Length: 282
Ligand SMILES: Cc1ncc(C[n+]2csc(CCOP(=O)(O)OP(=O)(O)O)c2C)c(N)n1
Ligand code: SF4
Image (tube, rainbow, N blue to C red; front, top):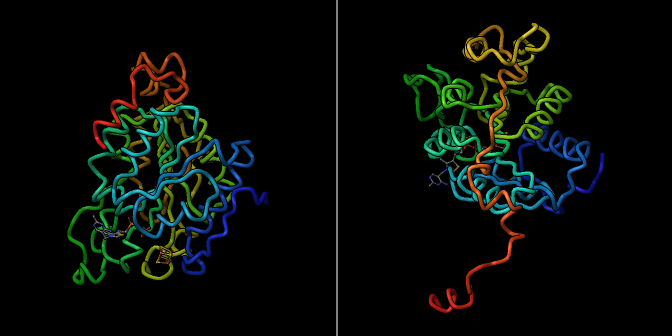
């Protein structure tokens, strides 16, 4: 595997964590898509997934909890030539960051949003998260969670997403294929990744997923059928679908900005005397 996306950082994820697979899939995907390290930017939230910016050798910003999407949106608007990749845990994305999700989706911001969905809070030692299933027992829900779980896929579909997908870390080449399609997609692309947390989630383990996941494309699934995508997105139990659920073509967010039709913002000449502006704040 190419070493050009490696960094010197010492990896502190637990050995066997599903995050390793996400990192390796991403490196291979970027390499195979000929996206050079300086052509991509990774934005991460707070959590075990947040260390991604240390471990992937592309431009990166480790932002504050729940704010991956507004930061990624700003980067894309400032320089839409970059491949912008957002990485968030299920807690980061669907608790503190939930408000941003529907807006990034309905705007169709041209970014790929990768959810490290381990169905718990990993970094803070295994508390129930918004995607934990009803009845899930943890130190914050010792009698079992009584709240309905948030489903990232149905949330995205109802908000009007143009690319909705799910991958599983144990299906390496399938994951890579889904990720390539998501990065290629012009508009907001969700990749909900089923990522076992071997230290804290003793229910949704590698064995759990190995016995349940199946590939949608092997069922003749039609990715243009929103209703079918919704039905499949609700399926969770003995059988768990992975793959591309839905995709459609719509203009990405930046096309609403006449100034961006002339090219990426950072390459346009400044029309204001910025020196004067900066002096005002000194
Ligand atoms: C504003 C704020 N609130 C709470 C926290 C504590 N906190 C750190 S990580 C985290 C959640 C981690 O879970 P998740 O986003 O699912 O990521 P994972 O660790 O599983 O990758 C929380 C609540 C924080 N750092 N900042
Ligand atoms: S606590 Fe869980 S999510 Fe975090 S590094 Fe360890 S196995 Fe991975």
